[in-house]
Length: 164
Ligand SMILES: CC(C)(COP(=O)(O)OP(=O)(O)OC[C@H]1O[C@@H](n2cnc3c(N)ncnc32)[C@H](O)[C@@H]1OP(=O)(O)O)[C@@H](O)C(=O)NCCC(=O)NCCS
Figure 1 (cartoon, rainbow, N blue to C red):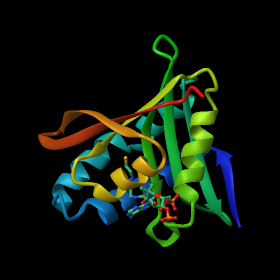
Figure 2 (figure 1 turned 135 degrees about the vertical axis):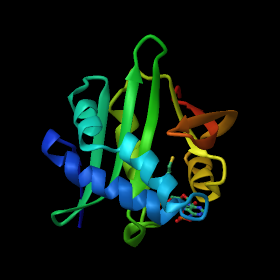
Figure 3 (figure 1 turned 90 degrees about the vertical axis):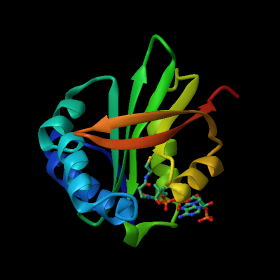
Figure 4 (figure 1 turned 180 degrees about the horizontal axis):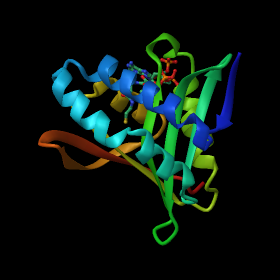
């Protein structure tokens, strides 16, 4: 049975491992191992994750199968813009297409009921995730390129209105 729970500081190491594995499993067609290592070492270090877990504007939810984390969603809320930003959403390959990503996304956004809009950036070539987000009601509103340690990450920006 899958259980959803708020991540705690002590989960930082397990979250890092899940994110790193998911990046290598999901993006190895787009990037070399060296490039993936550069990005994931910077963005998913235990220290960076611990700092996010201490931040009150951030909420990280994990999906557990037994005692193993099999998915997570990391969102942050910008009060001034009324916007919730989906920073990370990953489900282990063994557990995909079982509704876990949809549920993580739904629960993470719901944590900030005052949010009027949700947005995210997803790699342009990540057609599977783009299909997933379209199914969740997001639409493309622009493009943005991140550069991490010299690695270019061209992304699509997507947004969804949360007002009924
Ligand atoms: C994108 C991701 C989070 C989706 O998680 P998931 O648990 O597999 O998604 P769900 O089971 O909730 O899927 C809901 C719907 O989204 C769509 N969808 C999900 N995965 C899809 C895929 N690979 N291809 C096309 N559509 C997909 C389908 O319409 C699906 O409904 P269905 O299974 O009834 O057809 C997961 O594939 C993942 O972790 N991918 C690797 C990391 C990643 O790309 N994250 C996004 C970064 S921004």
